[in-house]
Length: 198
Length: 178
Image (cartoon, rainbow over all chains, first blue to last red; front, side):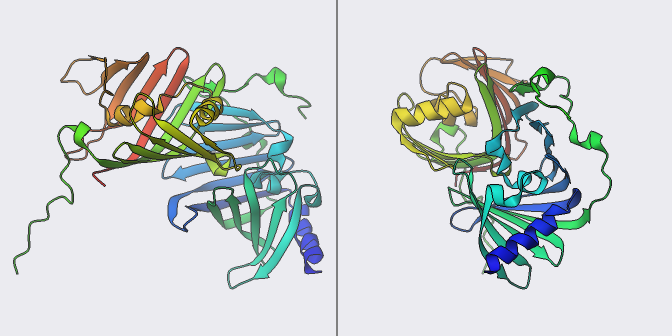
């Protein structure tokens, strides 16, 4: 069925994705469809397992995955939260783009559709301990234009990408994080705990 | 017809205790020995009922909290984005495990406005300087910055600590009286 064809297409599009860089606009709508939050910034992804969400508006926030841990830094709160890159995170949308695993291992394609904006592929995580119910990728031709996810509270996060650059060389240092002086760190920031650092 | 002067929609009482309704949006960071985390929050207060939503970044786990009743022993319900729905004590415990810290939810609605909750408390810090410190129920709240909007002397940056639990709050938007 076209779901199988959609798998191949998404696998192909994501398969030969070594790195990706784009501007993004993020919109959050609540279960009643009301826009509750809007933000924008830069996204950089380098496979395997490295990404950097650089929120600029309305306030700065940085999320970096260095391949073994995910760092979240909020300069206003002067706080860094660090978490291990665990399996349950492998099914998060960001990991969907930067993850190593084959798509079929973590997601099931449930619907494909097309509208004026994009060709959509809807997928549901195979694990049930994830925070989102489904994720939709919107392609226009070969280019990833949208990523949408719904959580179990009915909130929908929509990411619109622009100036998408695929497989451009990205400086690896962009996927490392150094705790700024004076910031409160939550979680285990010690290097020793990082297994299998490539 | 004459154009009526545009009075503010709702007069903001000078004594914020009288404020029946308000909304605040911003970010909250909690850290303690047990862990913690940060996220953005939306707080809607109507009388003694508070609807609070705390969202982790990029949808990684969000929590919807409802606190109602008197400040001493409010009724709490909690709903999480991974589908957990809890009431009263179970909700308290879940919230405290998730935030990794004790949460005086019943007092927060006063402390958010920069006023003391009912009961004993102590204000420190010289009156004329904006930064003031409130001590109540074993918590110490340092009001670092206030809003400069006219008629809204409410905090926009505060730090609360109790034992090794530290809470930081930045309010990006206040809506008083509605």
